[in-house]
Length: 333
Image 1 (cartoon, rainbow, N blue to C red):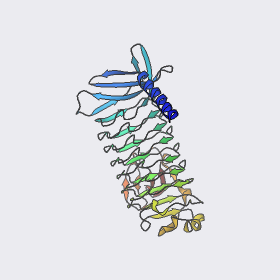
Image 2: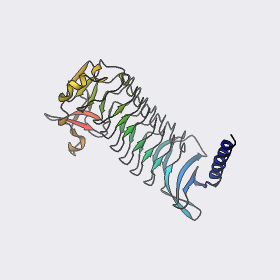
Image 3: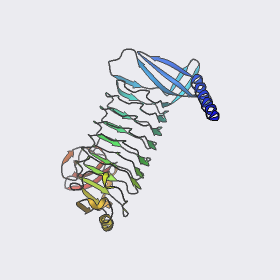
Image 4: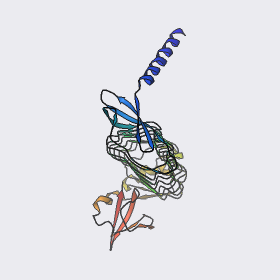
């Protein structure tokens, strides 16, 4: 017991020492006061740790600097700290190319934030980083990102377009839960794990592409996605998963390789689908191969519903593109 008390006392003392010695400084940008915390004094790096708006109410449009000064010393801004920009009236923000990490709940509850484009320097997006950003309609995640935390885009109910890069290997718990405006999603073949409730409640999701080399799909991953019409799974070796990953097995069509049809028919949960149809995945071309004149096409979902006359700003998914009498399948990633 005395040893335990001694260990706890030492840990507590170290923590107190850490927080006392942590160096913070605040810089004024007009009506904003932005506080930075030094990460490494030897490497001269810091993170944005909080923001104070002295005249709240109006929407903020921010362009954050890559380098900030504390007196005569400059620091590279390499991170947005946990909760640093949460519950603000940020409408638009430009992050510098120096940022490598976005902390937990960094933008939580920014209901006015409508678009976010992350720089190619970003390597990780923390838990609930953009959770409850209910105005967010599109997000571009660069190929530098390898980690997207639990609930990163939870309840972003206006999010209609999200690009998951090939660098991501897992989609964490509730990452896109409650994104009710998503219509289609292409999960790249780099993804090996889809955790529980990853896309739970995406009620307007019409189409989903399962990664070819997926190893685990956890419970409720696509639960309450009752609008699903098309599921594409390009593999010769379908994995076993619990039947509760989907809510509805009667309406969607599961498209699979013809050579693997027997394996799907004998593997849970894929054999629960009422409609399993062979599909030639070889004839799909990426959207970048279609051409530069992107406004001369008619774009349709695979069910024949017209989407657009323009290939720009399409949500990830599989489409039929028509130009004159020529039809072509494309995949937008």
